[in-house]
Image (cartoon, rainbow, N blue to C red):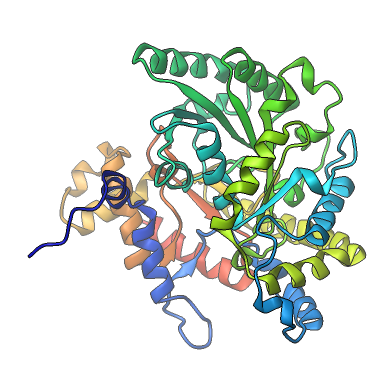
Length: 442
C-alpha cells in the first residue's frame, strides 16, 4: 500500500528548498557562544539587529504582563484597532506621509513573509511573473512561489547599474521576453532600502520604476522594511524617501497600484515576533482582500497586546531607533575598515544590517588546493564560478565556522559575492572576520 501522491504544487515546493537552508540548519544546530560553544558557527548571515538586543529585552521584560481572558480567545486577524493605530503613528512620525495614515488602511500579517505571499495570491494568477531587481532578497522565490505559484523573475543587471535609471532597459527586455512566451507579468517588487545592497534608491530611479510599472499595468509593491535602519544621512548619498511622502506620486503611476510593506523584524530587531504589515491608502480592494486572507496568518492575541504597548511608548521607540542607527554605523565602520585593510571588494552601503562583498579569489584557490583539485601552478588561472562559490561557502560553514549566505541565493549575476551581516555583537563580529580572513589567506 502506498499513500496517494501529493499535489503538483506540493511536489514543486519540495523540489525548490532554498540552497541557503542547508547552512542555516547547521547554524541552528551548532551556534557560536563565547562561553559555552566557542567553536560553534558564527551567524553573520541572518539579517537580525543584535546590536539593540539588550535594550529590547530590558524594555519588553518591563512591560510583560500576566495573561488575561482575551488572550485565550481569537483576536482580530488583521491586527487590533489599537495595534494598527500605533503602526499608523510610526508611519506618521518617520515616513513623512503626504496625509496622515489611517489604521483602516493597514493589515497586520504574520511577518512580511505573510504579507508578500498574500499579495501574490491577490495580484497574480498561478504562473504570472513578478519582476524583481537582482541581486534580491533570497526568500522571495518561496514567499511568492511556494504556495501562491507566482513566478519570481529576477532581472539581472550590472552592479554599477543597480542604483541607476539605466536598469529600466533590462526590465523592458525581461517583460518583452515574458510576453513573447505568452505569459503575463503582474507585479514589480522593490526593496528600498535595498536587500542585499544596503542603499536607498535615488528618487529618480524609483520614479522610473513606477513609470515602468504603470506603462505595463503592473502593481508596484515597495518593501520599506529597512526604512528606519538608515545610518548614513550625509549629503553624498541618496536619502530614503518613502513613496508615502511623494506629493506627485500620481504623476508616475496610479497610486491604487502601489502597496507599501514594513514590519517589526528589521528596524525593531524583533524577528521572532513574526509581525509585518501592508499599507495602501489608495486601494480599499487590496486592503479588503488582505483582510479576507488574514485568518491564515493569525498572531497570538497576547503578542498583539504586548506590541501595542511596546509601540505606544513613542519616546522610547524614537530613542531606540536613534541608538540602533548609531550602533549600525559603528559596526559598519568596523567592517569597512577590515575590508579596506584586506583589499576585499564591497559595495558601500548606507542602510540595513549587511554589506555585499566579493571574497578574494584566494578563498577559492585555497579551497580547491586543499581538495586536491588544482596544483600550485594552476592557482593563478582560477576564476570564480557558481560551482566553486558553493564549495567555498560549504567550507566557510563546515571548516571555518562562519555562516554568510552565498550570492547565488540572491540570484547574483556574478559569482563570488556574499552578504555579510554586521549587526551582531562586536566581539562576535571580530571573531567572524578573523575566520573569514583565515579562509582567504594563502
